[in-house]
Amino acid sequence: MKVSICIALVFLIPAVGCRKDPVEFGKITKNPDSWVYLTARAARLREPTPAEKIRDQRLILTDAEVLTYDTLDRATNQGIVVAMPSNFRTGLVTGSIPQAAIPENRGKVLPVVVDRRIEIHFLSKRNGQWYSTNVMRTRVVSLTCSP
Image: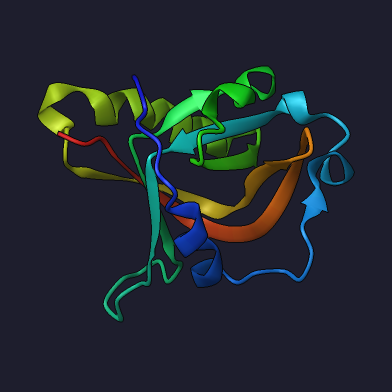
């Protein structure tokens, strides 16, 4: 799936809660190849409603694409890049991306609900190095594909 990239990251970071200084991603993990990377054209947070059973924020990624650490440079056109430790939970997320792209589901929001918190790092590249500019922990990641 081809991804059109925009600069929504500038608006997303204040909504998630910024840390004071970005942390070099290599200091977070010594094995970046073992993480899952997603790029998206847009991302937004949705707060839970009082009626929802799962009270976590939802991270909604539009036109998401799965990349590896070696191919991240392909997605640095001012887009949103997120990293998650690779495990069963991230398999649920990445497995739903093709489902979001099929014609019947385009434009729909497909929630991926898991039973534990996913650690999500928002990445940006500076001087040839990847930095984690923010961290979010949630149970719900929602995916959409633009029609």
